[in-house]
Image 1: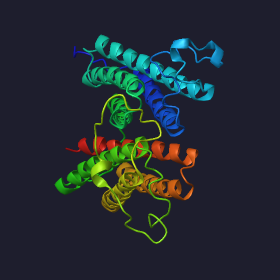
Image 2: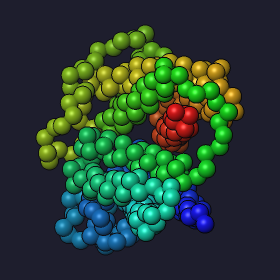
Image 3: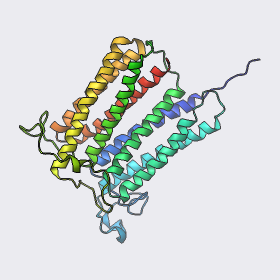
Image 4: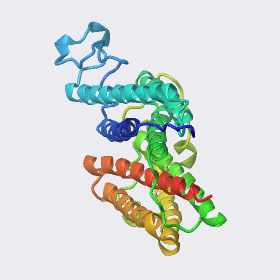
Length: 336
């Protein structure tokens, strides 16, 4: 009698989907906290002014925090982000426990849940350092990238646990596969630039579009100062420390990166639509739509002078772009 091979349960698959959605929410709330200048809404970690819940008024704050006046709204924004991030950590822990318990099942991913558990622990450390190092741009950008990496690995886990649909695709040629990988690298670099722009308060580095300033396409810029990764400890980076020329340099670099991203990902989308059918063609159409939406949001950010809903959406759509590329790469690898 042939041996019956057991596969991971649908419950685990549904948990992975739920955890992915939770990670996406954490990214959006994290962007909202950062863009509303609430990153230091609580001056300590993991509590808030030494308490589990954000204090209701200044009288409830201990004298140890007298140098940091309480802003209740900002404190609650920060704590909600922490509660969601803590829930995400528990969900990932549960996924890892289930994976190790089912490690002998056929098709059970083990490396991905284990990597996710290590990553979310490191993310918690980055969240702590974000506060204790006074929103240092290098740490905050790393924290943002860690959030995107967590979401990406969770989505890979969903794709591994789920049954991928028939793509109706031609086997990817070597050049097409290379274009997919290049697109992913370009997008990750652009997301990093976006994080650096946000954490250095460089979104206002240019006030116009397509020119940077009225009549100035290439204004005075300080690229050397703009990309100093690590500065001294003990400096409060809230609201930024760079002068306008350095912030303009960061902003213009992000615009150039956006143009490169549009060209590279646009070429990939066109190739997928023209060369493939079925799921892969639909993914090409999806990629082109999400890409155009992201470019539109980036332009709107400038024209609307960094409207908070638009800026948060810009972060969310960047995550959707990343997940779309990961799905394309994952499905294309099934033909090799």
